[in-house]
Length: 90
Image 1 (cartoon, rainbow, N blue to C red):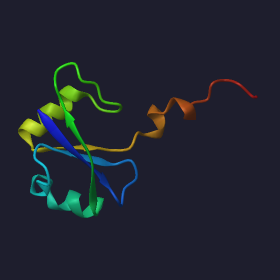
Image 2 (tube, helix red, strand yellow; image 1 turned 180 degrees about the vertical axis):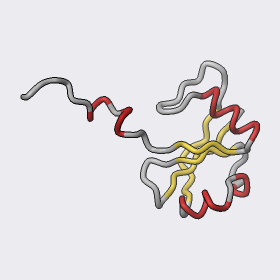
Image 3 (spheres, helix red, strand yellow; image 1 turned 90 degrees about the vertical axis):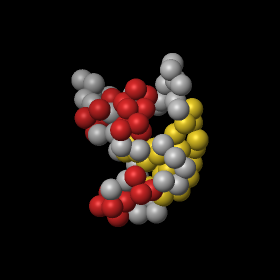
């Protein structure tokens, strides 16, 4: 399965994966409005064993099959280990 990845020009670190290139109609209109312009950044083969930096490839494949798109939001501060208090006062 191939995915076509687009970056939101309005929302930092937000990406849309599409099952078909330029098939923006798969994304609900309210979501498209919030994301603004989308710029193509990558075509990726989501084959078994493929890893992605911030997403579970099985979840992405499932969303692409069922919905035609997958939305990758920026990481939350709680999930970012560099924002944790490591117990040092240095």
